[in-house]
Image (cartoon, rainbow, N blue to C red):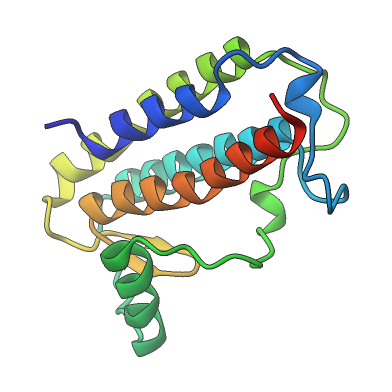
Length: 176
C-alpha cells in the first residue's frame, strides 16, 4: 500500500503533467483574480516547507507540544482528516501564499520541486515520529491543533487534493 505522501505526489504529477510554462499561468476563467496553477503549486510548496520547519522546531526542543485539541479543532479534524473534506473559501495565511511575479515554469519543473519538497517533509515527519512516537500529537497545526504524524500526512493529502481539483478545473476551463 502506498503511503499518503507518495500517493499525493503521483496525483499532483497527473494533474500537472504536460503543461508548458504559459499554461501553468492559467487561472480560473470566471475568477481571474484567483491563483494561477503555478501559484497553487507555490502555495503547496510553502505548506510543505512550513510543516518541515514546524517538525524541526519540535525536534530541536526535544519535547512534544503541550497544546490540547479544542472542541472546534476536534470538529475540524473530523472533517478534514476523517471525512477528507477540505472547506473552500478559506484565505491562506500569508506565510504559505505563493509570491507574485515568479518566473513562469513548465509542469516538469513544478513536479520536480513538489517531489523534492514532499520527500524532504516526509523525512522530517519520520525524524519527529522517531523521537516522539507515532501516536503522540506532537506538533501543532495552526488551524487543526495538535496532530500525530499520520494525521499530518492525511492533512497534506486532503489539502493537496483540494488544490488538485482546482488545477483540474482550470485545465478543463481552458481546454488543456
